[in-house]
Image (cartoon, rainbow, N blue to C red; front, side, top):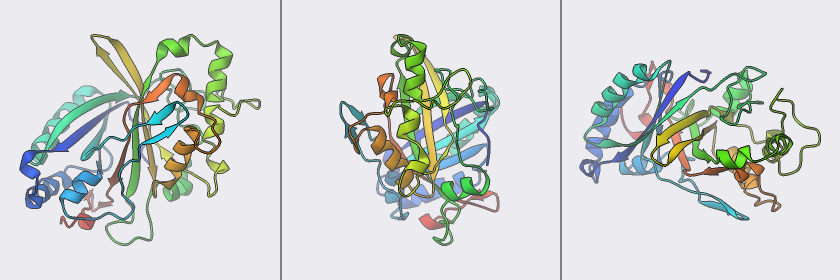
Length: 300
């Protein structure tokens, strides 16, 4: 399992007019892409829009559902392709981005880019969210992580693949800063100072809402989230690119529905200071001989 990199870049692609109704053009672009994706510095994730344009099927891949709860919602956004570039500085990601853009033309074009980064170091060694709380606590490790994150028993072209739930969360820092420190801890369910889980955390605390072992069946995913930031004319913005890798989307969706209060009407306190502005389900093909394995899509 690769750790969170110092710098990450999420490059989102949409289908161009040249690809509409021309699966051959798409296959040629994806053949070029396969040679550039190593699963370490570049991770590829395909959406239903792209898979359908190829006339292919990926069992288990479906559009992100637009879900609502009492006063909150999780939007659904369509993405044809997302490439997660990983490195140590932004300059290191510039040339790979250009190479990938050229390889995918004319079938796919860049629609947006989100710059992300590793922030700080928490008490147990994980990076921090921009609120200062440690992110990634209680991620499964070793064999448990592999079982949670990768598909198995589905055959060649599917085994070793992963289903990615990707959401961009926008933090309201003014709302968060206005909370007393104890209320901030209660929203998360952990003390910021030492990352210890609070025994008296309220039921709406994020830790209580998403305790992976509290679901039936247990809802474990492998999280590889990264903070993001952007300076705009209206001011600095930032939040978390939440990324959950699973052997299916079921575990993530169970957690999200509980966060939204669909089970019991109790909404996760994260919604008090953060809002998901995107939501996409994507499929990460397996790797084979150091390249992207696209046999499931009919691309050799």
